[in-house]
Image (cartoon, rainbow, N blue to C red; front, side, top):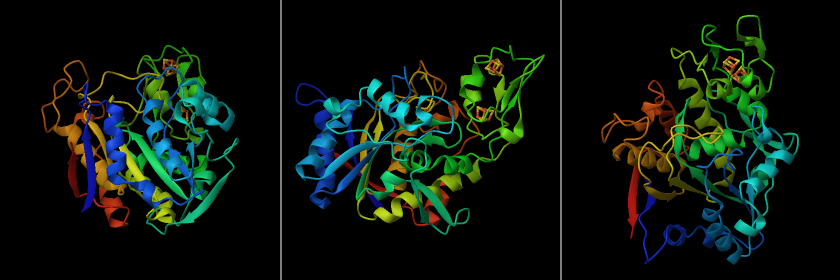
Length: 367
Ligand code: SF4
Ligand code: SF4
């Protein structure tokens, strides 16, 4: 059982939410384990252009201030996406970070895209798990001496939720790694609903969608399974086969995460922000109303325990009546309101079996 520290979102004249975050950082005291000139990768998702619910730059600055007090060298990082768009290669990805406010002035640290300009900067890490002998990890993140993982906790169509495990695994996998994580997603287009608007084409990096006489069609052999056509189609014509089993993808994501955590044993810390808990992940250009109220921020050395605690805190909360989860009750899986057949249990089961972390946790509340 691992310790997970929790501080509430509640704040007032006696202290802001940023003050709460500082208390949490001091409680877990990760900076005491940094050495002078240690490079520290601060892993986060910079959001897409026009997204409004990703992590705000103001939450990053307290980490950078603390890391710099230890005379270590922090940098903000993420790796390229497999779907088309500005985060699919290094230069425009770094521009998105700037556009969304992650500048050296606002956060105190520069941005380096961990897999380089063309995604070719990576290291292979042996994991020896059921699906992978080795995984490919974005180079600068792997080579950093330490890592602080800042995760916006929200829903995800394949994994149920996106938290610490998904942030490092999907986030720091190379494009080839991301491809393997999505390999069993086979979307299709319902011809009767498709208006041939072409919007999905702009997001389809491998050019797997063709506009034909009556409808768009997906050429299965070219599809990477990134799922973006499903999310961007205004007519909901692009669909997932819901009889598809996501358990393999969930097992793989836990195994991939091991490739990031294993080489950094004792030098990696996780913070989950249970704020703006939206049904969809931050890879889309829109975000629906949060499923529940803002809850708070959690910290742990264990990526599995922190996700387990976050998931249970969201499920225990009352649903937001103006959200997809409006019909749910306290205790229900709130993320199921968006994706009723996605269950994160295979991720937890695999994560525990390979030693990534513990599902059971000891929640320590900080006043
Ligand atoms: S976005 Fe939807 S409606 Fe438009 S072409 Fe693609 S599948 Fe058809
Ligand atoms: S067809 Fe859809 S799921 Fe397949 S690669 Fe293109 S956008 Fe991604």
